[in-house]
Image 1 (cartoon, one colour):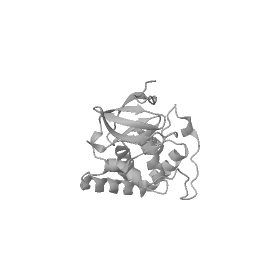
Image 2 (tube, helix red, strand yellow):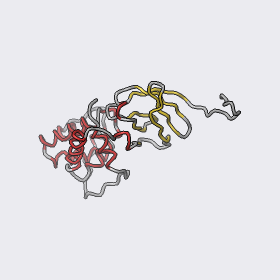
Image 3 (cartoon, helix red, strand yellow):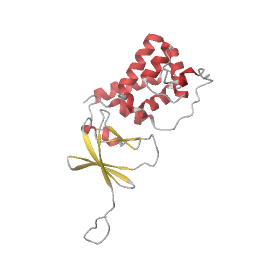
Length: 205
């Protein structure tokens, strides 16, 4: 530990680097945190404290987040996505509305896509699934999302495999029967859809 001139100990923290994705988020301890959109697709340094994360770019603190003790959370600062051109924002909002129109499970599946960042960009995943709906029909894609959501698997590739009836050898869950869907009441973590709308609003920088 170091000490300040006042004699009070300096809080111990670690430093790690992260790459910011094109949707202006980075991952730390399985959670996703936002940064100002101008830092999308850049590298940042995290000063990790017990209760917060300080995010630095070029030795300048660009934002501070409360450090979440949970897992798989999406933690956004609304101000990070403001002051962007309105044209792209409107188009992305329309994309979210089209996706959620696929069926009652679609909003929950969109949340899952936002959490599973290893499969590619959220907007790209959503667009590909919408293309599947044009090919196979909305009902078929929604049924595939019901099955995938039941097993906690969120990606365009998962939906495509289900629709094409293909089973991967390393995915034994796909051998299980499709769960029956009895209605629109799906228990998911409650979160404002505005957060996911903002993710869809971020353009390719």
